[in-house]
Image (cartoon, rainbow, N blue to C red; front, side, top):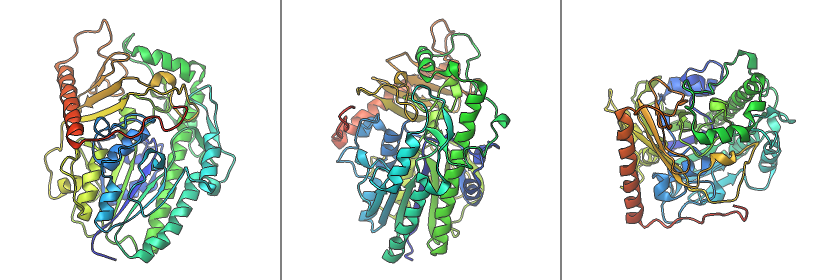
Length: 475
């Protein structure tokens, strides 16, 4: 194989960082992710640029934040005139393969030489449709079993398809970029046996749902609790959701191992970087909420990120790296690894350069995120989607340090949290009647203002033309 490294980017869908054994959760069986972390580097403080799929993936593939590329909610497509990561790698001589949920309908399918989407007609799509039909549309917390075998599930069939696609990868004999974004543990919270019952719900702690101070919950959450029908859920119902969610993650972990083993059997692992992450997180009962929403909380933004270098790369293995990173950092990281020309406007940092030698200075002391500006007609979309009150007509913008988080929400009111004393963000410091918030909150408010200006100026300098808004007739 050529000397230039291969890149394998595998991604779960809606897996929060706290839902993996790599970050200390003993209830989630993720042995493959744990193996990759022992053989590589685990980033403890990795955050998505957005808490929902399309904006987060668009940011990873363009290297800029949602306010720049203007994909801020699910109804938007990526702009045509921002180069995407696969296009950069193709120009650098890479053979690019994508399979799975890579947002092909949102104009994120550019630059791939061979690709199959979960949305394409065929057995993978049919299996995904059966899974998405599971669950109740009237509550956010339904969970259980899909009436199929593991081998008939969408993610297993997707892995089967990737193994076939690897025949061409091997025949091309060029450096390759393989991107495999799986669909789970995205709700509905349903899995095939034995993953539906792999985790004993009785062994799981209940997610924290209430603030320590009366009135600490933002007003919109009260409406969201009604839409999620949280009051109808028993403790057993909620534990069952968490147990199946963990089982879904275990199923994805197995599929990732299958791809790794297939690459090994074909001799394609030599000089290959393995990157594992997720596009964003999930409530899974935290705050009494389920699935996701257009808000900027820890459980929705904090994701796993593991990078396993080739054997010859000189770095300390099995290390956990502190310091705030953003998934947009993957764009310049991958571009620089393969020798592709990385645009100078990219808002991320090269993580690999950061890892050379010793303990470098932190990349940043603050991460930003953006979501919302939704003006479609969708209501609550359970069992797999968002509660109606979880969407925002405004653009929600936020920033977080290791001490505080701040969220500008002009629809419902700003939110801020003291992460040292309230890490689950249960008591909003900006609710009416609360004492004056710490000085760190005002600093984050100013930084959000400044970052908004930076993003708008960058968008105008680049002449970004927004992709079509409302690609579906009902949106």
